[in-house]
Structures are given as C-alpha cells and as structure tokens.
Image 1 (cartoon, helix red, strand yellow):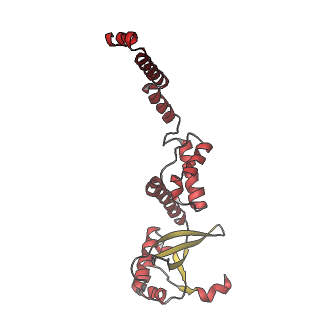
Image 2 (cartoon, helix red, strand yellow):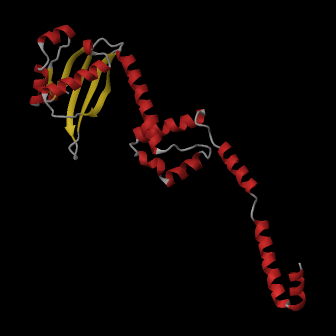
Image 3 (tube, helix red, strand yellow):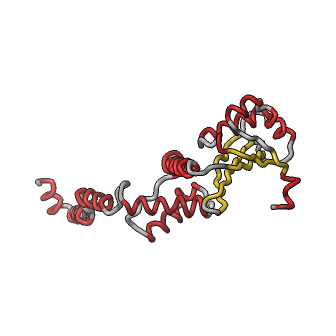
Length: 235
C-alpha cells in the first residue's frame, strides 16, 4: 500500500498506467465465465442426447445400416465425415452418430447373425433347396465364393444369399466341395439340396466327382451339376 501511495503522489504517470492495467485485468476476469458454467453446460449437452439403449437411437442406427450402408451402398467411412455428422445433427440433434469401428465390429455383425438365424428358421420349413454357386477373383487377386439358395414357398420362387465369403487356397474340386459342404451344413439343408447350378468350369466338374457314392447315398445329396451354358436359353 505504501508503494501505491508513493506512486500516486510522486509518479503520477506511472500510477495511472498501473491503474489502467489493473482495471483491464478486472474486466477480463469479469467477462470470463466461471468453470461451474462450463461443467453445467457440458452436463446439459450430454443429457440432451439419446442413450445408446434408446428406441430412437436404435431406430436411426438401424435405418443407417439397412438403408444407407446396405441399400445405397454408402461406405462406412461416412460415419466419420463432418458433413454427414452435421446433417445428422440437423435431422435429430439428440442422435449420437456411432463411429465406423462400432458399425464394423459390433452393429453389422449382429445384423448378420440375426439375418442368418432368421434364414435358418425359414429354410427349416422348406422341403427342397436348389443352389447356384460361383467363384470370382477381384483385381487384387482375392478370391470369393458365393452361394444362393432357391426354394418354393406357397407357389412363389424365393432366392436367398447363403454365403459370400473369401475362398482361400486353390480353386480345386476338393476345396470347392469343402466350402460348399460347410455352407449347406451351416444352414442344415444338406438333406434338402436337390440341384447345384454352376458354370462348366472343370474344377466344378471335379467337385462333383470328389463326393464319393457312399457319401452321396448316406447324405441323400443328389449333386447334379447343370451347365449354365446349356440352360441359359431357358432362363
């Protein structure tokens, strides 16, 4: 206090500069909100969003997976796109956009399991199933096998994708038979398969031969390969 009094009496210009700086600091502190306001506002923002178990949260997430990712073929990376997140904040400010990893490793696998279980239950009511199968290789030399099951239900033809999965190793008849058997066993339709339609590649022909007559009789699996090149005129 003595120093301040001395400045005010003997060094007026220095004292005025000191007072001016002091007043500016007070104004800055007065304009800065207290930390309690920040904590309260953050808590309010969190409470303003849906919980992960909310019906609205699940409904929107299911729509994104079914309509955008599966239906429209949009990439999963859109979940991290700022424009998509802003769009969703406009659609519903309470919605919490899941990250790409959550979709890839949790939500979509659960959807696949649900669809597979429903399809198994549906095929259990069918008396016979025909299969179409094909193998292809993409530009990076990654091979895939796809198998589709075809049935009749109440006079209507139904087709269901049973598997679309990587095909490791060589495309030999033995490997193809192994993959096909694993797929039909997964859906428990081995006894119901009547026909398997493929192209006329030699490895498919060998896959038919690789099933021994004993195995065909024991499993009642009538593996009849129809060449697509011969029946394409009737499709």
